[in-house]
Length: 282
Image 1: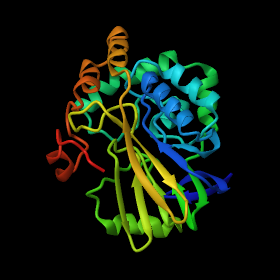
Image 2: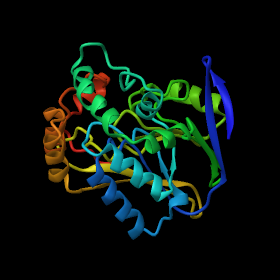
Image 3: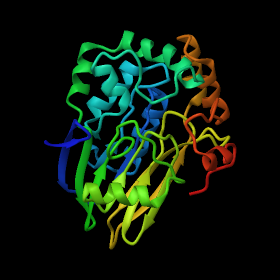
């Protein structure tokens, strides 16, 4: 595992070498065990093995099963990077490190679900988090790819569809990459120009603020030439929401699982905020 120093922080990078065949990419499980189990079934149906599956981090989050989620992902044997939540948990920090504004609704809710996650995670789960890299690199279909959580220089940085291409291109150039796969922002999107790609598969633990209960992942393909497709799926969101209520986790997030609408748009730029409740078609 290589390391690179960025803004005084040492980032570990796991190099997978060259990968071939369809790749499945997802992120943001957020302790949603029901969604994870459905994602695993989809991978099995598509006949995509664990060594061609990548998670962009934030495996722990708002929902009711942090320990079960970590153990299932660990046993699955897929490639994972650390999200800001995993970094905060493994370092024993007091908050999730999501860069929310102090006193915001997201900040208030995190004071409920984050301590709950801390209280139920086992020593073995925390130890596993310590081994997670910040980034993953690999070669695929003639492209150099890098997997980040939020942004290249900051694990909890936000990159959206509306983020100017110039910023994305700068990060691609500094990563010496043709393709960046990102997470963290909770919304699926793709942006590409002149053979360079910034792709976000979306998350499976929460819906994409489009008034549907669907959650999102992505398939990359190297057949003949590089290609990608966004995919969504339904799962037993009612059971996931009920489990949150049983654990007295934030009701607003349980409702999000059922309505497909975020409680607030505090982290979103104007363009993404204006799209709330509009069905995503990718």
